[in-house]
Length: 447
Image (tube, rainbow, N blue to C red; front, top):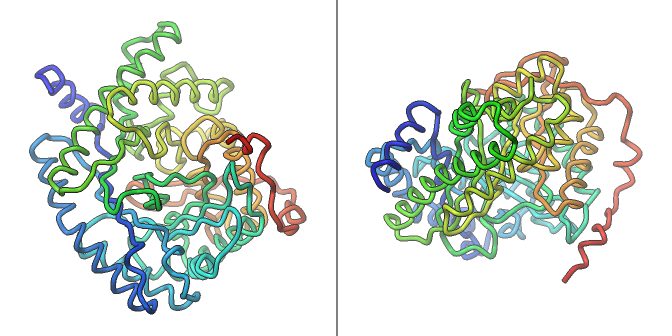
């Protein structure tokens, strides 16, 4: 990095809330399967603490040397259901606690991978993991979970969709905040460094470093310099800014991998907001030309933003992956919260926006009395968008007992505060209760 690049980076950090959102170590657990669940849990703890013992120290050293904040240090592991074939709903909790204990021992913020891949059907381990989620997510502190219920190739497992709606409600009965630690996916990716959906795919190396960048504030400041310019200029400005952001992520990831003596994987280009003013994807969309997010034209602006971020970032990294795009979590974005409060942003509009952004309906608070089948139907709608468009979509939905539309629910820290949003009152129960499997769309047969 030359002097000008260093100065640009310092400005991004000091004035625009720029950070490296996460350095995530992916660790395979396929070689930890033991003769019993207890032996597997022991092996899981040993492997994680061995590989990740220096992760936090190395990340903090890079922060000091280069002056770039690294907000989270995280671990992602092989989907636990794949190593828990012998487990039942009770015994699999030993692995959840092993993950939690290992993460705390090495000092990371979160560990992801208490996960199952059930887009075509269930194994014994899958069902044990899903049924254990209410206890696993309330008895542990930093364990994150995901369940993939659909893909463009396999179609949608409607039995799993129904089960996940019921699981969300069961988690709510134990905790008003634990659902923030679980996400339901379609087309989940294997190298995602972001929580709650991070897991280490079976095609990944034994251990790898992946980096997630951020920077909505940097993009917003750049757009403030081109007010009144054509949309072509806006797109070019976003591309150039994404290049600068990604370049720093590439540097940090390469250094971390080198010092930890493991392979460097990918940079995830996602613009990840925080609750802080000036670090909002909504504010970026408004700088493009919307009076407020949710206005007509929001989906078009988001599509252009997402595309420009990818085009600019891909030139600055040796390998781009993960989710890569713009996140629109309601509770974690001050501008999104403002729009919900002003009634310009509805659940229906957010669903439309997910057709062109990264992931999907994220950190959405709904009334505590929302039916399980309604939650399942919201998951099904998002999965259908992902299946048809060959993209990752997801739902992280947060029913809160006693909460009514308009209430504000505080989840703390980066998870922010979510306004409770209304759902459609008409029932979807007959659809969800049919069960079975929604076939993959016809384009899935390309080979």
